[in-house]
Each structure stands twice: as C-alpha cells, then as structure tokens.
Amino acid sequence: MLVFVTGGARSGKSRYAQERALSLSGVPVYVATAKVWDDDFAARVKRHQDERGPEWTTFESSHNLHMLPLENRVVVIDCVTLWLTGLFMDYSNDIDQCLSAFKQELDRLLGLRATFILISNELGMGMHADTEVGRKFADLQGWANQYAAARADEAVFMVSGIPLFLKKS
Image 1 (cartoon, rainbow, N blue to C red):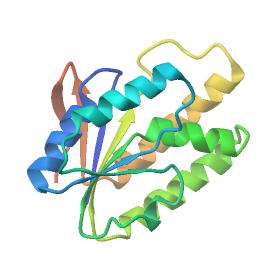
Image 2 (cartoon, rainbow, N blue to C red):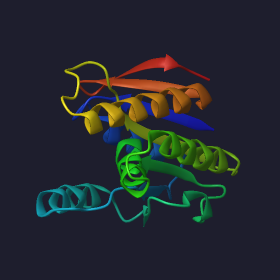
Image 3 (cartoon, rainbow, N blue to C red):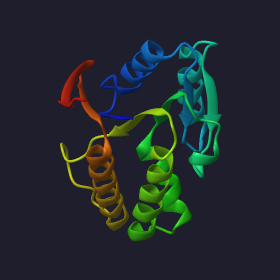
C-alpha cells in the first residue's frame, strides 16, 4: 500500500504522516532521505528526530531503500524532494536519469510487503525558478510527484495542517 502525502512547506505533511503511521503500527519505520549539508539543516533534522518517539526505527539513506529491512512494516519516507536532490547531484542534473532511478526504486519498494507513507513537496503554486538548474529540478519534482501519486492507493494534500483527500482506497 502507498499513501502519498504532499503539500507546501510547513503544511503539516510530516506530522500527518507520522500520526498516520502510528495509527497503523506501534513500531513504525522512518526513512530519512536527506543529506545534511549545513548547520541549519542539521538543526532541522535534529528537531525532526527529537519529535519522534522511541517506538520509531530510523534509517538514513537516499539509495537502495528497497534493501532496508522494511518487509511487513509501516514506513514513512521523508521526503521525495530531498531524495531527488541527492539523485540530482549524483546524476549531474540529468533529469532523465534521476527520474528513471526514482521510478525504479519506488517500484522496487512497492514490490515489498509493506505500507509506505511517502511525503513530498508540492510544486506549481508559486514562482518559477529563475535558473536553468532550478527549472530542471522543478520538472523532475513534478514528474516524480505525478508518478508517485498515480501509483498511490491514497493521495493526501495538506493545507495548513488539514488533510484534503485527493484519492482514497
């Protein structure tokens, strides 16, 4: 099962996903896909870690997520945007390679017996990036979101902490 949770920054995506995971399992898994690149981001990651209780198993990985021990678990993957950022850097901004790698990995994950709650930032509600690399990344993010949402059993759009159900199983 895949639940796709999207919305803007500080819309309540992570909180919703974590609450949903805890409602489905007393021992959920959290997969953090971020690579920490500065002190501010490290502090943000630490805040997220502190908000999760001891019942969570946490993995920090942005590659080969399907190889983690996720079978028969409820898994929050936070988030697609940071996962894609790592791929974007690994593949030298080649969006075709990035999107292909993302799709392959998501398909591998969905082949596992597990419930996945996938968090992603929504695009297209603001200004266009003013650099070529920014526009490429926006294209990548939009296409990855569309792919994940199409594969999802449920899709939730978060607005000001309120879940709006776009697709429900």
